[in-house]
Image 1 (spheres, rainbow, N blue to C red):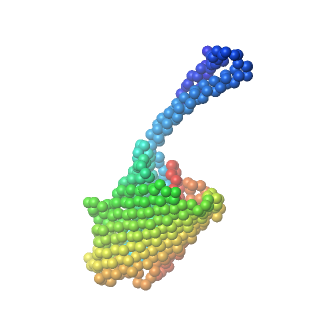
Image 2: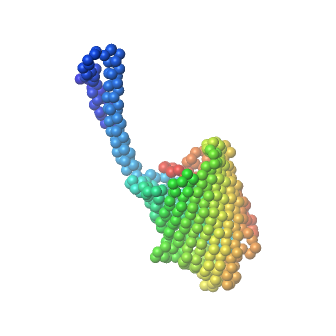
Image 3: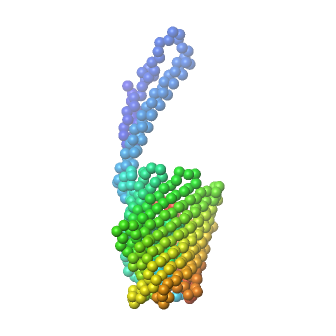
Length: 441
């Protein structure tokens, strides 16, 4: 008997090549069928036999491919990426004298080092642990005043198979409040944080805790989530045995035809027992009390027929308001004052990709505060009185992005955060090496 060998997914299958006499045995008939009918019956039988054999082969092939994928996932676990960020910064004022009237700045808030600097580069390791969990850790290499430090930026796991659109994340991660907070800085359209993020979150809000989100089964995108943390990171502070801060958020959005899309977000963050929150500059003031922040964000995108490769437009805006009540202490002199903080701020920006690889952007920031207390002299020294000045800033950006893995950006800020205008100029590069997942909306 003749046999044919088929090679499928690394395995050998022997399929007998049956002779016509063996493959087709016509049943006895009372009347001899016509030659055409016999031929058709033979073809039908051959086709049925072929389909049965093919079905068995396909089943074996799927099992083999599944086993191969599992083996490869373990072999290349974890995926590693390295993101290089570098900056040249120039200021007309002394960056060491920077402050934001009416706001106490967190430790990481402020201006980039003048001249050339490594800025903040990242190394990320991520992989599916198994069919239920995914894990990721990101380490930041930051260059500050000529000294390089390594920090655990994120280290968390999240679930992959919870029912009904639920997802749990736990560990250290960027909070999902607002729009850009949970995005890493190299994803931002501008090279520095909006003033409202700088003044209220110390550039970005981290959580050491857990996050639970629910993607509702609706035609329109609708996500509800909540977070609970230990309250260690700015704008909270202190040691808490239980929950030190918490947040909640809602995100919804959808498409308008083929070319337009939008997203709206509402968020709330709260810490009821802030303990010794320190701020930089101005006699190193500390704050004890409670704090809450409410925010709204809106994003609109346009791309002709949904194709963003040639041209696209993105408009985004965020607004936050913070209310605080407690005690402000000047750590250098131990003087203190009761404090009622009332602060808000917003930014709006437009980024337009006018041809492939090139995009330009415009951003405007504005802040205001109406803080009061029992001792204005203390609040003045703490930098919590704006003294009739409204911090604001205008920024222009031009970016060349030859691929999704590289970017060169030039940016100019006219910063009127203080009464003395500061003209700021930046040139930045971002290089991505290794695996890098898709970014969120």
